[in-house]
Length: 336
Image (cartoon, rainbow, N blue to C red):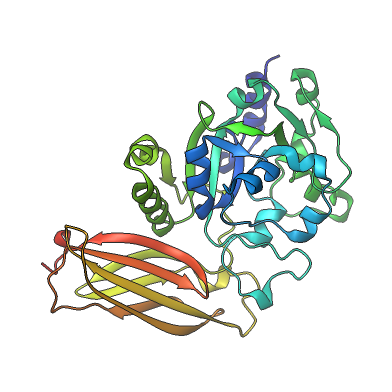
């Protein structure tokens, strides 16, 4: 039996909305780290990413990292699946006062780099560990036979579980690992974004950094809302659009937010640059508003109608976190 056969069996066992999970292994990170990964061509180990400056945004829990031995920080790491316990605590922006005090992980704008599972397993040096390599207790394995004996029923388990199956939480952290990291090419199949606005942000960041990089990856950056891979908790931006001079940013459903019962406020800042086609800035303005974490659904800002410009550069921050960045082509709107 080969790796492809083993994964095919797992796909057949899974319900429809999850059948695609075994096709990939998943690197969960913040959108701000994408440029460093694509520019270097590697999903690096924590040790190398920190040493080279490739890790712009550290979204890991300090408690978990401090409990992980130094040797394990030399591995590039991929999850077998999305929707891990780590992702639950870190995904989406959460004001500091409502984050888990012990975990305190923070990944405001998450993305998944999805690597081809079979190619990754066959790449020299690839290993795997049930329950992951965080902390001290783990068993690193490699090879087809060891892979076939993994407890896939618990690794890919989704939904609630009883007290007799509490170790499912640990199995959901199972990882595919490799010393120093994984090459992006030829393993990367796609990059999944949580919302249309966050896809726009990633595309804009890459385009601003390098048109060559943009042309290489733009067709592999996807927003697929029907795929079950994000918790949609915390607060984040779903869409940004213009309506007759009014810029509007829509947030996710408040009922989905982590600890949405708490009366906590966060500051939203919208910064606008009015830009001509030659790149010159005609005008800059910004505005801020305090939003209730449990109830806020959107923010709005009127734009200048008395200026001649071609592009509207938009930056939206939650407190100090950049949540959206893009340039809107005003020549394609009703305004002009």
